[in-house]
Each structure stands twice: as C-alpha cells, then as structure tokens.
Image (cartoon, rainbow, N blue to C red):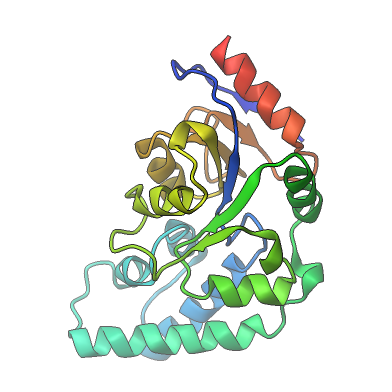
Length: 231
C-alpha cells in the first residue's frame, strides 16, 4: 500500500465512524455500470468510451445519463426509459456477484473497524446499494446505508454523507469517508469530513490520505495518518 497525506488545518478528532462509497471501493461494480451504459449507448447509436465511464464515477443515474448524452437533447420520457433500461442491464449483471467479489482488504478492514468500536456505513449514489451489499454478504456489517433514495442532492453535494453520518450520530470531524471518485471526494470535503482517496481517479492533493487500494489499510494506519496531519 502506498499512503500519502496532505496538510490540513483540521483538528484531529475522535474517530467514531467509517463511511464507504460502494462502487470501486467495496466491490468493482463500476465495471458493470460501464458495460450497462455501453450496451445502452450501442443500442441508441451514441459514442461511449471508458473516458465517459470514468467521468460517471460517484454520480447519480441522472447525472451519469447527462455525461452519456454530452449535450444531446432527449425528451424526459425518453430519458426515464433509458435510465430504466440501463438499470435492468445492470441488475442482470449483479447476478454474478458473490462474497468473493469483495475487493482486497475490505472484509478484514470492516471486521477490524467493528472490533475497534467504529460504526460503519455505506454512502453510495447507487439505488441498488442494499441489493449489492446483500449479494456480497456484508450487509449485516453496516449500521446504516445511504443510497440514491436517501437525499435529493447527489454527490458532489455533501448531503448523502451528512445524512448517513447522522444515522451514526457522528459529526463530520468524527467520520472518515473512503472514496474512489472525484465527485465523492468533493462531496466529503464540502461536508467537512476526513477523506481517504482510493486509486488513480483521486489525488493526494485532494484527499487527506491517499491509498492505491484497501489491501493493506488498517484502522491504526488511518488514525495514525490523521494524527500526523493534526500535529
């Protein structure tokens, strides 16, 4: 694991909550989203690449459609129909998910955090978050799940993180957000949370701590990293 930190003026808190994004953090369902949007785009004759898919990371289904359309006008009825079709394709792909689909280090980190008395939650733009977590076999490990049904304003607004942290009775300075998308990092920072950025889509300059993945991340390494920032 490569961990980097950035300077911050925030006071080191007593960490009582970990909030995780879902796609690309807990499991790689981001690939399913890409394939589902790609199938829809091909059927409608719309150019679509992994570049557009990367720009969708952390966004709601509606905002993802806007990325796909890239300014092309469509009637609201058509937009609704396309979003439902995309979701149907995605749900079909979710049948492939099993507990083995968890990304490296996730189950160990969740177990370690629970043993340390840290409350756990998922805060995802996905409206299928409960289904995904259930298929992964980790739904009972989380004290709260915030999803695309929970708030009106999606990421990069901080509303989803604030809503979910509230379910854990944790204020932003007591909570750490684990995110792999720029929209999610922006949302977490806007809400005043500590942020662990994961992967190449976010940079060490944006998140308080940056890691390549969760394979070697521990509760101790996160708390120590935040302590260094506050010294």
